[in-house]
Length: 394
Image (cartoon, rainbow, N blue to C red; front, side, top):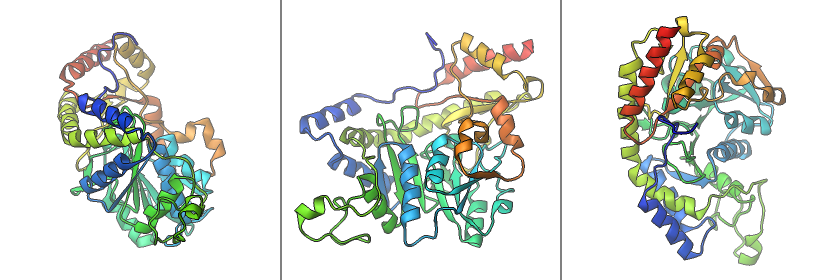
């Protein structure tokens, strides 16, 4: 759309990020180096996690998390095991699980929080279930009290896809730190922007070292001399090309690490403004009888503003989206809607627990508009005005 009045996302860079890029160029070190390491250390400290590992996207963060748990000798996760997942999420929540031979068990989401319906979780657990992939959707924390109780009761791993929820908190703990491993994304539309980039957080040194090796070809070069996978021989020539795990090439750029350092300095203000914008959004729409907006769990970081059309608006999404476009307002589906409706599901070993009626409603009647680090008062007022005019016309 041209002349957009309310867009999905906005550039959060300033002179600091541009200068950081220039410094990397001057250093002549473009591949992963000291700036990436500095960003990892600062990121781990900010989120009160022992270890952080930067990769080139949130999707590859999910990939390395799954791979690390499969390859770990400390955890019982193996091919053909079952992992419980919510039926509304992004595609690369699911793909790494399937690519490592795990069976997906889809559970419906709560219509109001948009996160996995914890009332249905226990019925999905069988003697083959080994993990829950908890997805904090659009900035909103899951019900981790219920999830962690089940993980403890059934000895399940907890993996967090936190790519949309940087800065959210549950019981004062940051999401992305509540499971064995958690992922983050720094794509353009997210809370922090590093061109491309992602991060893994964990408190387990063994998982960190596996993921570190997997990040760069499965070699031992980036591991300490004494490590939990294979100690180095001390011969630098031999150790430089010694491969121990079936890895990938998913290292981040040094520029992305340098940008991340600058973005992290601003992240509190970014998230605070998102929360301020959310207060206005809730004020405008919370009492509207023909829409359902996302119910905040503990402390959301408000990735975007979801809306499920209901009552007399239930079957009006296509016309409403057309009206938004005519009024220069960008919108998108609520992530991938009911993911089981996507044709790619035929490639994934999966089962569906119960019915997915909430996911189906989200799929047919849901949408979201953007949120970012700017004051969006004018944009939200415009959105509300367009909504009210459309509602009256239905």
